[in-house]
Length: 428
Ligand code: PLP
Image (cartoon, rainbow, N blue to C red; front, side, top):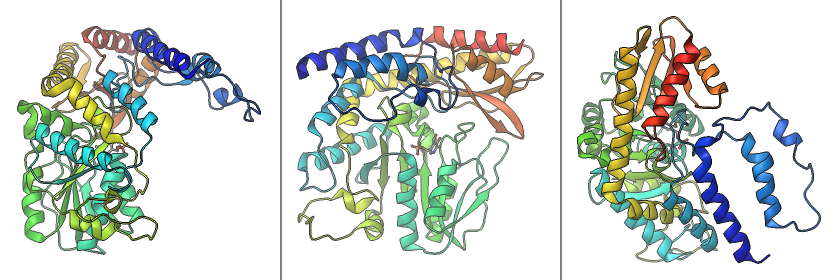
């Protein structure tokens, strides 16, 4: 077999997988250790053909996966390995460049700059921000808090009790204390906490549990007055700003110090890709810039290794650039609007059904709801066990609620109909 034969086999596998994903069980029926027990404990002594890898993928690995790229994956924040993104990942691996510094692969750095400028324009972010790509929102928030600590060391990180736990994790890594701020009845962070001892405030646009939106304009005003860094975690909902009618969600971000949006959540880019912008790149450089005799700086160039924790950096810009080009503004808007339409339709069905209730105001493509008499965790467990859908739960106001998160580009109206059927069946 030549490389070209294997490439054809891999591309056939990918195309067949995408065609049939919806017919597969979305979650596996396996116990801990089961997959590991089916795999050889030691590596092969001799080379094996690539087709054997594909065979084991079909027989052992895929049956043990929760299929994130499945049209009825509604857990966590559903995402998409889109066709353009898949193709770009292949090219990235073939090129295998390292975007750690401009000199290490000049076009990789410059494409990252262009792509972040493009995405900033698509989202309506201010022009002229420094932007770069991190692996995840967790790392992007670490970057923001490390930069904030350069300007005001030793204080606390204020964030909502509904913020993603990555904020607390990042603060802990940096030796900063987290102060959780209560929320109002719409799960929005109250904006009147004292800022005297604050290093940073992290506001969320699209919280993990209910996709609520913190009052960024009010927080920005207070943070600017007090000289406190405001970081906006728009990991999920920031992508909605591609649509002018949803752009309200990032109001005030123009006055924040930094913002993260994850194209690997709701912008059809395969894991991983987290975009980060700041108006204070010099604070990032103060936190992360280093000198090594083995890697010279190039005058007049940006070395992204100086703006975050990693030295080696994947060529993620290529996949984001490919996604932005192959969908275009129109295509991205159409998909986001379709997801919001499907979520609104699902919400209508829940509201119209006796015994069910909506648990949080819905702004985007995530619906939180519960049955009045049957435990949400039990319904979600039974529903997921059918293999037909994957939904997860969270807790709001002390009650367990089901979250239906729509974010896969292959999801259609029929898929949410199936979800509603399965959930009603499981509540009986
Ligand atoms: N912020 C929010 C609001 C999230 O919902 C999540 C994950 O779901 C994160 C941050 C963490 O994202 P990542 O997995 O990219 O670190």
